[in-house]
Image (tube, rainbow, N blue to C red; front, side, top):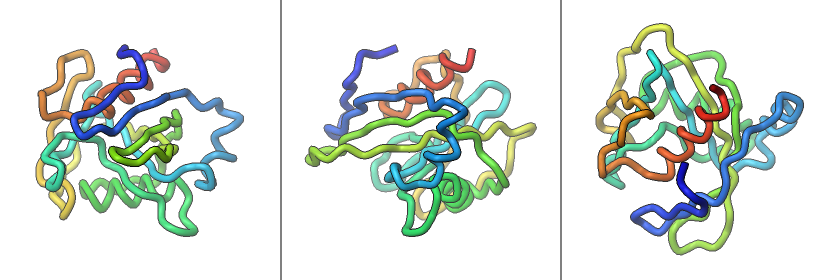
Length: 160
C-alpha cells in the first residue's frame, strides 16, 4: 500500500482510509458525517471502473450525497445513474478522508461494496462514458485515478 497522504494528478489528496466497525455502520450511514459515497463494484474478484467524461480518468462510481439522503441511498442512486446497475443494498465498509485540489477542506467519503453474481449490462451516462473490469492485483492504467486505486486496495486488504 502507498504511504498517505497520496496525491493525484490534479492535486487532490487521500488523507486516510479506515475500516468501519459493524457497530458504527448504521449510525454513520445516516449520511450526516459524509459528503459523498463511492462504490466498489466487484464481479469475479475484479472491480468496475468507469471513464469519467470530464476528468478523462478511470474511477469508481459514486458522487455527492444530496440533501436528506443517506450515504447508502446516495451510493445506490449514483451507481444506477452512472452505470445502469440497480441493486437494493450495498455494504458500508470504510470511510476515506479526501482534500480536493485547491481546497484545504477535508471531505469524508463513505466506501460501499456491491458484489455481483454475474456481470450486468452497463449503460454509459453523462458522467461515465465507458467501463472496464480491473483486477486490483494488477497495475492500473496510467489514466486510472490513483486515489481510487488506493481506496480499493486498502479496503480489500482488510477483507482478506
